[in-house]
Amino acid sequence: MSYRYIMLISASLFWGNISVAQLGTISVLKKELDKHLQTKAVDTSLNNWDQGILYNLSVAQASLANWSAGGDDFSMSLSSIFNAHANYKKDKHNWDNMFDFNLGYVNSSSLGSRKNDDRFDLLSKYGYSLNDHINFTGLLNLRSQLFNGYTYEDGKANYASSFFAPGYLLGSIGLDFKKSQKFSVFASPVTTRWVIVRDTALSNKGLYGVTPGEKSNLEFGSFVTLNYLKDIAKNISLKTRLDLFSNYRRNPKNVDLFMTNFLSVSLTKIIALTWEVDFIYDDDLKLFGKDNTSPALQFKSLVGIGIQINKKR
Image (cartoon, rainbow, N blue to C red; front, side):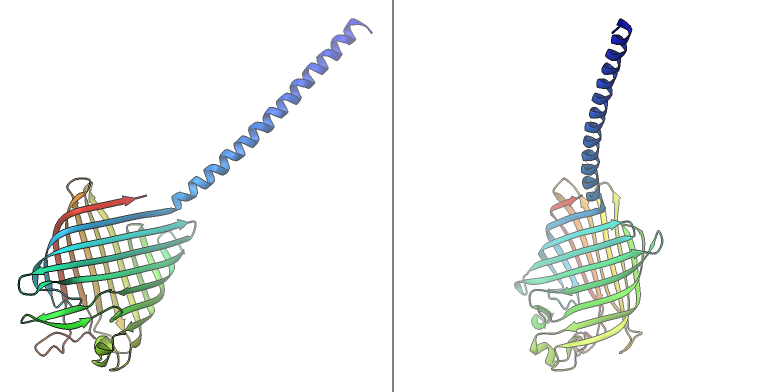
């Protein structure tokens, strides 16, 4: 075999080994890249969720008017507020969940130490995007309180509310306009609302729209809810919610109203000034007026300072 053939065979073997090595290296690199992309896909999916928790414990100045959940008209109180949200969005699907729980204790020289107010409120809505801002949406809302509530007249306590007395369970299908995750308006002409009065003493009076002696009432009507969350400045935030419900079966022009506003000004990482303002009008809640037989606009204002923890992701 000549020297030239030996060189050709050697060169062929040399380049063949390099090619095999290159193919092996490429295969290893491809596997590592696939693992990296899979890991990134899992991590990225977490960005589909917007979650947050706010807890506030404040010494507050309370002002109340016609407040059925209980409390003196003007008093010092200890107020606790817990808000949580978990909102999901991916492709055309979005799912928003909010939970609020408020609890306050009053310290009044005329009444002594009594529970001022408490409320829990769960709202969940699932939407399918029709375009960039409008979703076809189903909504569920549950609202009630945990403890007994009293209205006060001339220093006398009158039993007015309790756990699921009343309770409101609302189901609705409609359109949800969402300008962003911070602002949305849901409207529906097809809404059912169950009003629950599980306490016998209150249901026997026919309060909250139930037939005397009955524990619940089914209503059918239209519903609108507006939700707004805004960071006005780096240390100032505002949260607003407005619910409107018209009962087709009874006085549809007398619209029930529920509105809550929470303004927070952070002074340090854990100290904040807060102002909570709530309005409620229920045409079926006839506990007020000269003879305690008329509906009225309920009003609550709490101005306080205290500890606040706000976590977002």
